[in-house]
Length: 316
Image 1 (cartoon, rainbow, N blue to C red):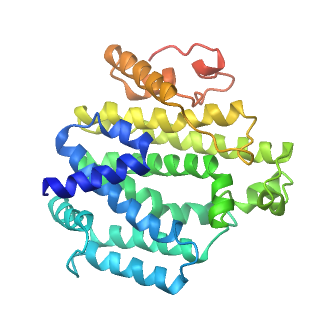
Image 2: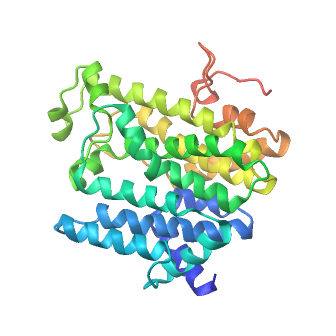
Image 3: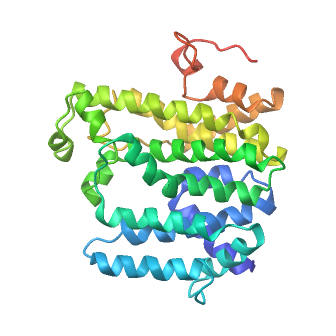
């Protein structure tokens, strides 16, 4: 991959994905360069459907199909990111099926703005999130790839679920979408029209709490597979998990009110997550144990909470 193409990809990631970019900086160069390209490719596809105010749906579909053809090598790339992605796809053996699954998920956003059940949302995330985990695993080239993959899929889903829960207000206002399953709202007696009006209530808070717990189970499954990645990739992936999950602390501190304002992490908070994760990693090279120690995700043990809740979790 040419350096100018990597630089273009890096600029896109730095501008649009600051949390993930921070973790990416700690990857070894052989993986970091490819990660910049992957993220930029994902972002370009995402922007076709997310930044499409006033753009006809057929035009969006045409743009995605054009992007698909370039990603698959069926057309010459017209963008430095796509040129780099073509080379990356061939080098790391990323399958056509995985690319198709990702692009198909992006196309779903053109028509679909609600998900009836979590199973429906999970089907969407197979392309929009799990494919990201699969491709990231490919460029890391772990020895036990088949063992690592199921965990990478769960971690990708966890990251996206955190984004969905963090971005409820933004998704409603800018895209008219609600990703939280409708069945969750029914279980907690939340009128979906209330969400569309950005009206916070105790019942909405209960629905958010339920989805946070579901997402945290995904984090635990995902982090359990970090040990199967190359040693020089484990800390950066762990750091990404800690940073994304830290949004849960902010959401809880707002009493789950993500309708009035979008939860965000300050630079100081991100740096604190970085420092404490690296410190514990220096002493204990166990991804699960360090994640339990420093992350916002409580342990699965009944009645036991993570350190952010005031309880101390012993290291394994």
